[in-house]
Length: 286
Figure 1 (cartoon, rainbow, N blue to C red):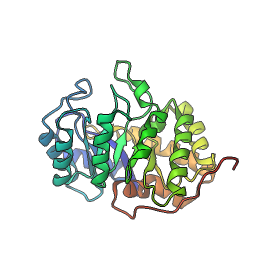
Figure 2 (figure 1 turned 30 degrees about the vertical axis):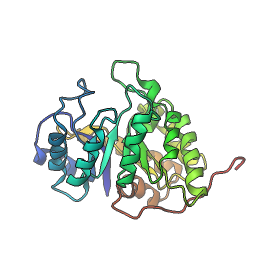
Figure 3 (figure 1 turned 45 degrees about the vertical axis):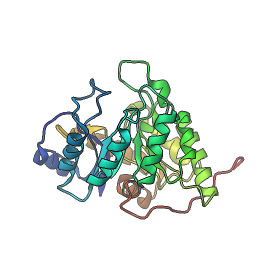
Figure 4 (figure 1 turned 135 degrees about the vertical axis):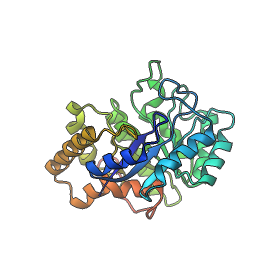
């Protein structure tokens, strides 16, 4: 079973049958679908009113229990809280955020993230270099997400292995893991979305570091592609699946770990499988 944990809607096409056909041909049995963007991202895709964007992503997902609708929210919008409430009522399973003009620790953004955590929904953040034609990558370095340690019950993922700051991402994951595993009352959990991100020339190095650094990562790594619903690039997806599987096998990862990367960890992230699991505490000097 393989899930794609990072699929975008980037146009107003509604060819669900074509999308599902491409998924089947690729061997994809489910995934996370992100709604059309908010108005702050006109260069990415045409936007629409919040209710229309919610209904649209729900339309894409209502053919399968294994397709999980995520709503792309801008926490700096004045009605962001109202959008969160509406999205949860309509059945949205999580939220997408790109910090393109503010730091994750911004006071207004943090308040919205707290509200999302209270709904028990996760957040998928963009992290790493941001190709948007403006000076924005400073907001998306992994260490800038440390303020999320203050939000209890939050589940979040940093996408694209934060390339090119992959080493920093691994270090930040270790910090969140130390807090999570070392304190039963601390429930902030970080996941790592290995969606490219990393150009192929860097892939082996980054995945090797991630899985051999010594941190308990097996239950927190999620496969994704950054593909779109229409057209879904099945050729691109097959290439990445094959490339990553070869690297995983060369590293000697267990079948259970590989299965979790491709499906189980996404299910736990979105909340459809059991939540908190015990983990080894990373300590200095180990």
